[in-house]
Image 1 (cartoon, helix red, strand yellow):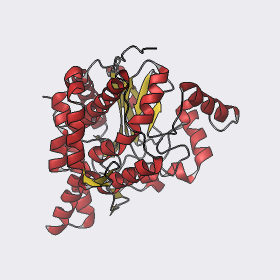
Image 2: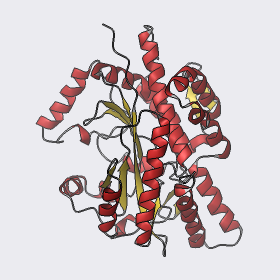
Image 3: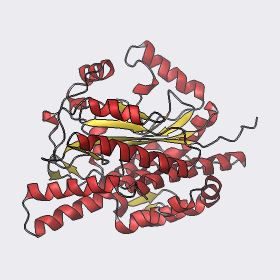
Length: 381
């Protein structure tokens, strides 16, 4: 039976850190007025609290294309930054603050977060991390599962491009996305399971619900999952990108990959599904090295520079980028690789400051300032 082509509409969620503009540390108890004013000024979009009081989550409305997503993110970043500034705070679109200490932070007093704090204990108390989630509309649930099985292969590539969390509590972690290390401590994280059908997936969710370990599918925190709220396939592995154009590139590539996989299916073809351990190895390489990494080309098999693999993806999805109107955003991936992801820029900023004679603390503050500036750069253009 033929499946109607998905609409491939998109929605983007970003989690931001709220930074005290005097100390450049995370705001421990930001005013509740920030959330209330943002909600009032952004009625088309979502603005919600996150697990930590030092965080804010935003979500775009349903966007027909990447151009609409750009306008939505500009509005969200610009408005939240403007409101936060009234309270002496800045908005930071990065996955980890360079020197904050999770021991000092407080979780949001909300029933959902109270339950998470009680159930997960120390593993969640140190969750001073933020992610970017991209929803792509795949209305048919069976197709949603089929594409999830295949698209997992590409998740490490998207993580590498988005990497923005090289520091942890004031130290270079040696990883470009330390956020993934922190998040992986939670249950039901990592690459998604593979399923033969949507029914098999719902049976898994039902089993966990009936056993009392989760309330619903929103507690499956996989790198990619069928959304429990929308008819979308939600990509969750990416770090938050300080630069707006980088965020849009990750979202555009994700949408194009799904459309390319749909085209293969329509032509009775499909992407080869490799053992999960192999994809996990690439996930680790992306987490460790970011855009400087060499992911494994399983068909050879041999390590291949990410730049070469991204060129292959750009070629594979050229038709899809044209159809979805995001050719420029997809091709911007080359620029990310050329100049590095946010993780590379943060490390370069820190090392340059130390080499120039700054103290470790002063150098880390310069990193914070760099990310704060990047978060709102380009939103007025």
